[in-house]
Length: 108
Image 1 (cartoon, helix red, strand yellow):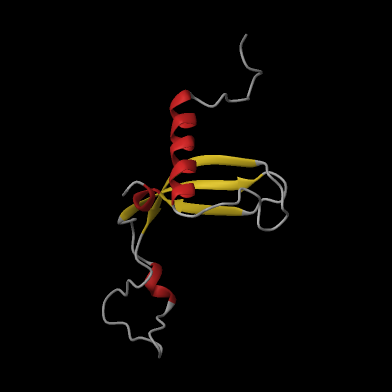
Image 2 (cartoon, one colour):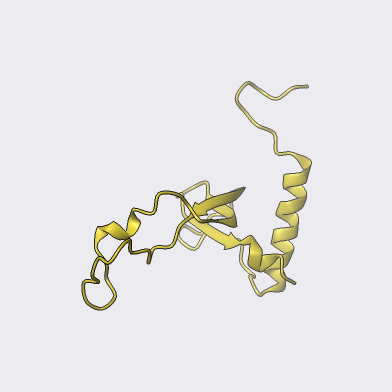
């Protein structure tokens, strides 16, 4: 039987990866699967690659504005310079969102 139009069935690889992440989090002391905001146990899990660029980029010789704060020109870097691989976990009740860095979780 096929799934209804517009509803994506989770693939086996994503299910395996999700279970691996759960086991890694448990091994690192995460002992509660309830939302910290609404105490619900209903999550959406996605694996993302978020493009990133340094927030401290300062083009040319524009001066800092005291205490290391720069002008808005710091965000003019034209292209992202890296990728952050994360598992994104979203509460289906209240929308609370958390990210876990896969680079950290995969290093044990």
